[in-house]
Image 1 (tube, rainbow, N blue to C red):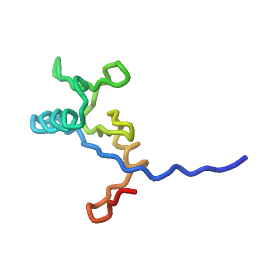
Image 2 (cartoon, rainbow, N blue to C red; image 1 turned 60 degrees about the vertical axis):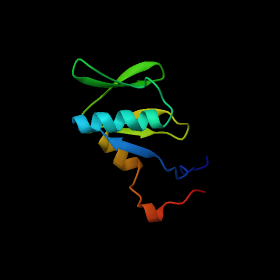
Image 3 (cartoon, rainbow, N blue to C red; image 1 turned 180 degrees about the horizontal axis):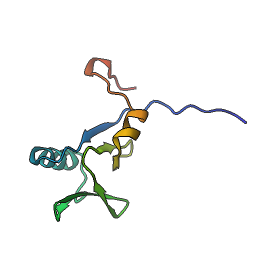
Image 4 (cartoon, helix red, strand yellow; image 1 turned 45 degrees about the vertical axis):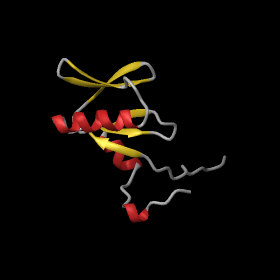
Length: 94
């Protein structure tokens, strides 16, 4: 048996806090990244289209833009076990 370590990956993410400004920011961010119709608000709930299925985004979830440009929700407890915040001066493309 061999052991493997996950390669470091830098992603962009927004935390959903359920306010109108978040809705506008999330919509603009998703549109800016070329994704169309991947975000919807109806019946007072927020949904993200993931692999052709609507996934409800719950308060405090993070919306992550993956390496292939897809978006997906992530619970805060999983997000902080998987990612750490980097400052602009720590970031450089490889």
